Length: 412
Image (cartoon, rainbow, N blue to C red):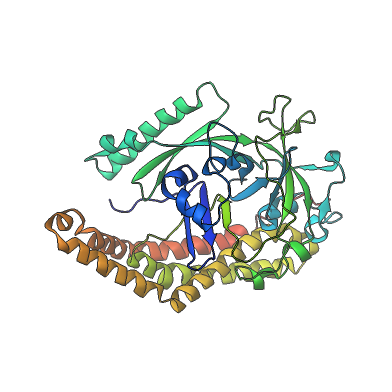
């Protein structure tokens, strides 16, 4: 099958606004091979080895996956970690009560003893990333999609088990580039993470729904946590005896500020990209998925708003859930508007015409790739009659499922 999921785990996004802007998103272990020279031309002043290195401390050791859904950065030798306010939002809510509403009023621990444990919140460091594609290539040749899935799971399980042997690390094989390459991610996860501070929502969420997904945005979008470890600096469940984690590396904060055309490099966990989907998939997003998702979330937001206005307790209980629903609702509207204004669908279609011309230029290309676009088109046509009602039904069912089950918080 041509269609396989793309998962992006630990990437570097680089942008520089010099004469001609150049930007991209890359796996950090490939920088030396693909981007080092150009990054230096753009203004990078540190060696590439200081960005990602498995043999000594590097910037990667100061970057964490915050809870598995955001990025955090270590900014002190005592495990202090900063992330976005919207990333810490649900944790701040869970620690709030009607008497101590940290979402509304903010929170600052004046000592480590006042820092608040956040059960189930994790901070994960990447230890190393190995390209293990060679372990799969020959083994998957000629297999059906079902056989391929079984074989991938079998090989991945063996690689993960070997990587974890004799360590406290975790390991996972991820498929990238639509299942054409495989990478082994070895990681270290800390499970004692505590809330240190957060501004009131009037600062951390300034502009609210109106400014969300907009640029420029003027908001103090940050919150502060601390990672704790056992006496050997290893991951441990929460315990009063745990001590602040000593990171292998942490970022220092420059007080010199920034200047126009400074080199910019963002290191973190962006999730996934839809950059390489076909025009048929993009058209489905524009005409089916997003419009239906928006309509359903209109109703979800209306129901939650009505409930939140009825009492202060419900207003607090639904804060994180409302924010998550609204976030996608606003994003999908922006996607439609942006793709329409930029004529994104037409650009995809033009690119596919160029691809078809390239395929037809030689018999070898035609034999190997000539059916790709037709397969994608037929797949979307054959599944649209199923996925459209399923999408609507699923999203509508979430309206009712979400209402009676608010996020758990402490209400005294």
